[in-house]
Image: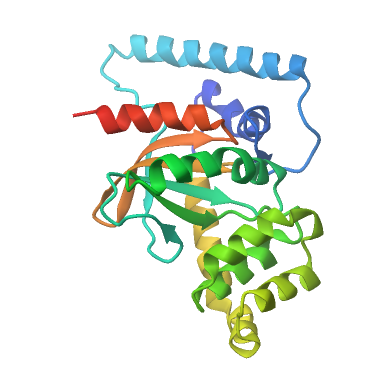
Length: 252
């Protein structure tokens, strides 16, 4: 493996902790951060940032830093809500067992849907990031996708979050049945390895762009099968999303 500059080495270890500090489920299992631990991590990241700035200066200032949080991900039509012609798209990487994803679903999402999706300003796409230590997250993601094959993704998606405390095989089966998902086709789909592979592709892309926990978002514009925009980490408030959305809508 190629040696990285010393300043880069702590970043991977800190990424998961930062997700927890900003209101999300980390890819690594473990307890939450104390206020003091969070302050220590932020201070260390600031020190790393200063070190990188110094290295850039020593290189003569030729190296141009990437736009902070600017990424691109594959677009999807399968689990999308809102007008196809909406000027902005919000992609969420979610985990049905993550309490922070439920927090976004319960608090921020209804306001965003009402103000932007229902008015044609924002298109919303759900992609999957089931975390390994959430035993029901992958089965739930598979079930939602399979319900989607029968046109019932959104009601099942909503129910899985609304009843997150009861998430399990019986609840998932009962939810699908409640919304008229045909049992034989549903079971065939759940056993289809391509469904899990598609979810694993979502996980790989999320990790590639720096989404190390859930929920993670990309807010931007559609371009040639991609969504290009800003990375947003954690269950942020509706006001935080609204500020970013309004700024992009107002941009020339």
